[in-house]
Figure 1 (cartoon, helix red, strand yellow):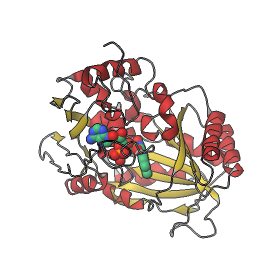
Figure 2 (cartoon, helix red, strand yellow; figure 1 turned 30 degrees about the horizontal axis):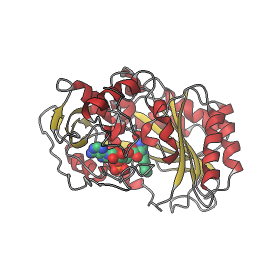
Figure 3 (cartoon, protein in one colour; figure 1 turned 45 degrees about the vertical axis):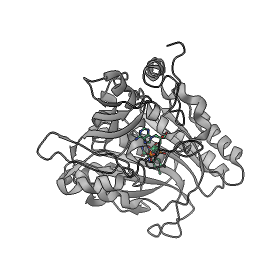
Figure 4 (cartoon, rainbow, N blue to C red; figure 1 turned 90 degrees about the vertical axis):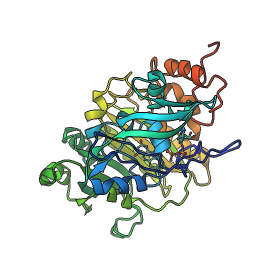
Length: 386
Ligand SMILES: Cc1cc2nc3c(=O)[nH]c(=O)nc-3n(C[C@H](O)[C@H](O)[C@H](O)COP(=O)(O)OP(=O)(O)OC[C@H]3O[C@@H](n4cnc5c(N)ncnc54)[C@H](O)[C@@H]3O)c2cc1C
């Protein structure tokens, strides 16, 4: 199944039969009712702009070309998640075609096991042809890129300011060489900095106060924080070079100066044009959901980290670099987030679905897809002998 074709391991590409879902693109907004019916969207950009005139939003992808099929089925953690929950927490119903060709309308009351499984379990259980989402009232936000000078202390301060902030404030921080983008001063391009993507989705009158602790960390290299329509945040997306990257996803409990120093040491060891450590402080509404309420079970994990490096001539060197840096940051959380899996992560399915989650998913898989017809994904195999 292909929605936005954005999967890090190209799971919607390959040999076999391709179900290209991009023409399933209707959007039905339930005006005046508590729920909206969001049609399946290949790209979240159009969905976001369709909701904008109504002052409504779903926490779809923060990158416009990501598809809502893959992003929703894996969970999605984005700029609205600390305030309104993950995207799966706002799915109230779905239409799914299972391996036997049957169409199921599922929600908390109808086939609740299957409904549980598709909220985090990926495309393992059938072809989702429609999602219904709970909509949030979000129109204007305050945010943009904030580039800070990097030291172990500024990394640690940004992590703690993000954790202490109001839930309406979300920071996605990349410690990386400043990219060659026109709005970044040329003297800074190529130097390691913190590129923080900041969004405050609360009362605009309180926005300046909410972001003040971020601005106080150090004199910003660049401060483009400003009011903007929520839908416009997609316009910040850098044009894709179709670059293949090695990615290692993990969770950590705390990000202090020691972890900041580790990040910088490893970033300085490489001269790849694209190398970064991304961190996102989670918590808020994400962590108020019980671990077994959806198939995304990492509700108590405090900080998500993605270590990324471009695969240039030597793929194994790029992978080794990401794994070594991730191992140096390891604090005992063995979990990983399936939506950031790359080609080398097939063996990490237990990390994505810890505890009883994988066993439950495998039983549901055996009920709805006993022959593992839907296998080109982060695969959950049906429990044997069921
Ligand atoms: C630039 C970029 C930024 C990202 N940022 C974030 C982020 O901020 N937060 C986050 O949580 N994730 C993020 N991701 C990860 C993203 O959520 C996943 O890669 C997601 O799987 C992409 O969905 P897609 O529909 O575009 O992918 P596809 O490659 O089309 O599909 C991904 C998987 O889902 C299956 N699938 C797709 N649609 C359906 C369907 N309708 N029914 C059944 N199965 C289906 C496919 O078969 C495939 O296995 C990002 C990825 C990229 C490339």
